[in-house]
Length: 263
Image 1: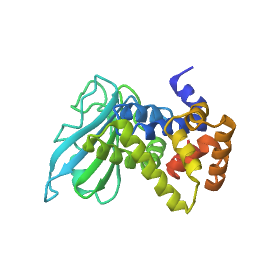
Image 2 (image 1 turned 135 degrees about the vertical axis):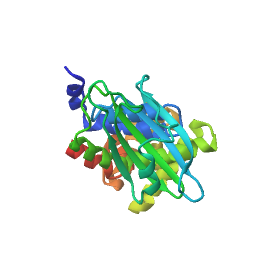
Image 3 (image 1 turned 90 degrees about the vertical axis):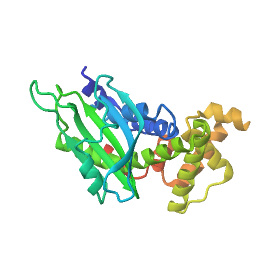
Image 4 (image 1 turned 90 degrees about the horizontal axis):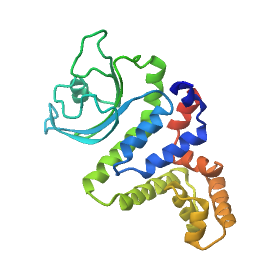
């Protein structure tokens, strides 16, 4: 069975589980690897490179490029430290989020950036956050359907990259900032949907979102596993979803469900 066939066998629940793991890893060294795993589960990608670009005071050039993580191919050239990257002018001129594709040159010709690339870019103030997804030059370039799929997925991934950068800048312990980021995001989503959960329901939801299991939470809270299931059922009913994967889906908002429906 080909790798593409393996992707087709992945269930929505498995993808939502991977999304939950990605959210929980924000700020840690595992973040890029888990993002690569999530994207590659939907379409073939061999490398992912994350970076934060800071513009100068006049926003006419890039004053600093901060690598935020990479995973995958080890023989591909890095893009984060290249001040003459063809993406540069698009970044300087951008008004909205971008998706920019570059194709590797055909045949034996080799450029400095000889991988097929799909660059997802967001911005706020003088900051630009870039997700560079890459394929080997001997493989097919990204199709229009795949680019459209990645554009929708960017609504979920780019905000996570921004938070990842903020956490790294704080230089806090990953286990502490992960929980803080998740708690903040969880509270924002509750307020957005005008939902009120009990303290125990929130505790169970947070425990599951950070990778805990029902037995682990039962031991931690000194209750039966059936009680954890009950709290989860009550919480997800208020949120309008069902089960643990429904909870992760709710945390991700609408972008990932739309991608899955069209994949």
